[in-house]
Image (cartoon, rainbow, N blue to C red; front, side, top):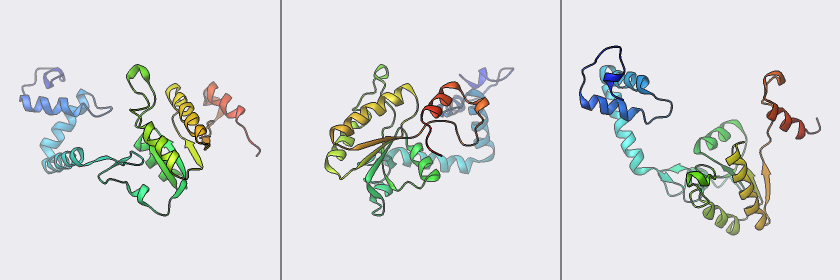
Length: 208
């Protein structure tokens, strides 16, 4: 998609500008129109910001890798969470994406460690145990004094399958597994909640 395809009429522009607009579309949720607006804004009103963004992005791509223990993004060999001596080291929470760690850190008082899968099991997409780093996690479970593995994968078919595999892995080590509760969200009204969610919430009800 080029700039010529975006407007009501023909828009003469440089091939480099077309490349910039097309490159911006690699971002999630950014289509041709949004990419065009971003490109024009950066070039017309904020070239300094564009240069800074370019420099930081290049550094990030070159220097940010994965923590050797939990696989979260970090420019260090071991991330700050894994290095924090105050964290509870007998509990590991497994999540699918780095963003999940930030959400849990912001929304809960969890003080244990993490393991980031960077996805979920999906054989059709070529994503198996190796791609999710499960050998690394299995080694941690065998060598560290882990007492509980919290399964915080998403409530999708792939997420549930992944949670089942993780539970079996922990079971072989004699480690307890727990799953995040699923049900009606805080502030949700039953009238507007889907049937599967209501069923899970009802089946998993507890003493109040």
